[in-house]
Image (cartoon, rainbow, N blue to C red; front, side):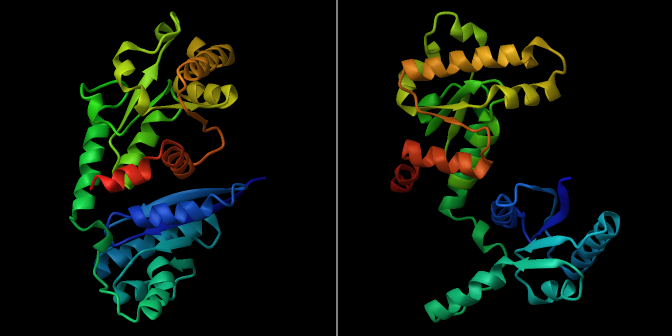
Length: 274
């Protein structure tokens, strides 16, 4: 029987940092089922008390001690949770003190510092807007994309693009391969000028069938034979045009993004253009 644990990501801002760090750690325990909740904008005593009440209610329902990953900066807010019966990981407490010692300097303690309206932050927001406008073959300006993900329906293109945009500031577009694209075994015409920007995603037929079954139960679209056929033709197209591709079957979104950045050489490219 799979063990289940209740997890909260606690933040005085959006919760993105707590989620990213916490989820990265939890991926190492794939035999445990985690029920995740994000408690964002806990930035005053009242909201801290409300968050604590929610965590306690969750503990009563689950019968287990909740796990809390926190990026709260204000000591008075962290103190609200000090006496709570939770497994507490404070990311700032864990890492800031050693950094202060090494740098011989005090940290600013400023709330939301990691999300300040810097050039890098604005770049990420611009990338997100671009990605949303170029999802599933939409958008007319692929020449502005840093990367274009290519793959059949439900192989993880959209969430990967959004992660690359939000976390790495990359303008990520995606284009769906359909049975019509396989008829002549040629790369779709809109993509041909941008072949150097293409990166393929693949997945196991069994996992794809499971995902599609949740979307369209008992359909030809979700059948294992359809999934095998589409994946075989997509991978043949990748190989024909020399397009690097990744099997994402057992990978987390963080692992997928990191692998794409590494294989496509995008991290340094993006930093050089700032």
